[in-house]
Image (cartoon, rainbow, N blue to C red):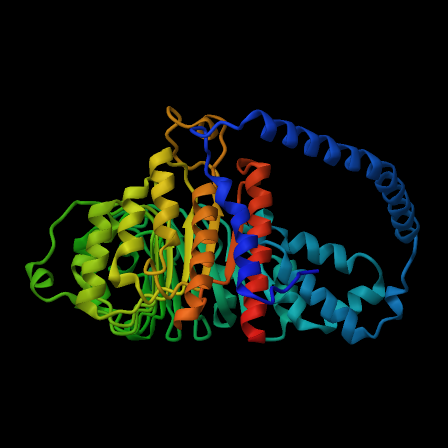
Length: 499
């Protein structure tokens, strides 16, 4: 249960818990303070010891209840066929592509009733993943049966990597709504039968290898309604492999390296693009057309941009993004953040959602203090270790109300495998990532905001989230501190709503 603070003084007092978060080795405790802390620690330990028997009793009772419940057989077959069929559909939607056939087989193998219900629900059959034996044959009855049971509904088709995918697999292309196609190369078909019509296809993930061999016939996908495309390199769009109206594409993901020479002319054609993801670093081969240096490419509808590697921000020298609201920089330095800021100012963009993965605080500080990021309301930062002086500076900058003045939600992400300087920080040597600078900064910011309420300034930052892809890299102290600060900020938000 969260205790809502009924006055600002109580909230500020609660936030003061985080003030000692920064190490204070310069101020040793006196004898009286040490004695008091030892007495308090002994009292807490005695209380814990007294509660342990009660906790063990409750755990034993819980285990007994769970054992009894596990033996209960629920009458699943008494459910209406519509509900059971919907359960099958949810099960099929929840598994990864390579588990599709196994899950469908397990459902239909239980009994005749389940098999009949599954066949009567075509959505159970709309995800297609050809097994290996199908890829090595000229026909497959199981594949044909799946198409028949789908009854013409749009399909999600996944083709695993294979050197010679059989032609009959593409007979279902007219039903594809979502497709993932891999091959090496992806077609060995006759030249008179290379065009595949995909009138329903809206989302395509394509990964081809060795498709530029001479004297090789290639399949061309005609996708008039394509909206989302994920490709390895822009080369896929320069050859006769995909046919679609360029202005209709809404989302483009480029997973491997590209050159500016390839990408900029392509972006000039994708005038309707709303989301662009570039996962790998640019290849510096080739040269930029001088016209793009004079007149940047205007992308009037692009609202989301994700740059996944160092040097990718140099793209922003050559584009104008007036509609940009969401920006993710997975790796950057001070020079690149300045390029980002220049693009934002030149384009007149308003970034409201910002995601950053810095490695040193000097780079992060440019984003914190730049007026170009003043509209940001949601911030995600991947945590990293800092030198003590930089940690104090980070906490102090984050505590300032003029740092990202509209910030309402702050997310801390802890990732696995981040590069760390292990020479100066004990936590870094232990493989831990310290959240102290960020927690201290957020707590101080909240306290400063409460003190400024009397001057007519609202409390804006009321939400703190933590994301852990590597929970083992967080100390128990930081875990407790983050949880407590989350509760306090939630109480503040409730207090604001009541006022």
